[in-house]
Amino acid sequence: MKNRVVRGVAGSFILISLLLAIYVNMNWLWFTAFVGVNLFQSSLTKWCLLETILEKFGITD
Image (cartoon, rainbow, N blue to C red; front, side, top):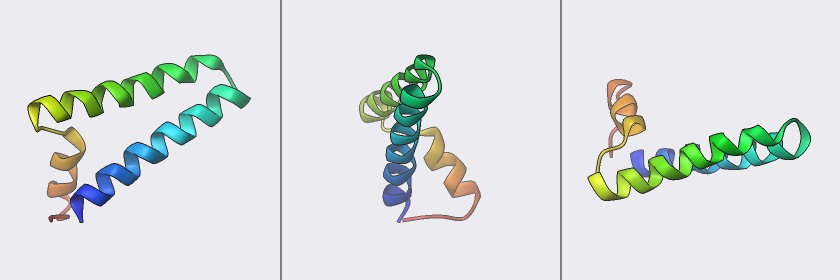
């Protein structure tokens, strides 16, 4: 369950920031890059801040 939520949130953030970059300001692409860097970092370290936050809210696997 937790993995699906993390992937859903990351995908939503990327899509929303791309839409904001197209319709509002190109600087929203920095947010897209931030999400991508965090995904890459979590694949290397096996630690994700969102997973920690979800555990505090009681969402587990």
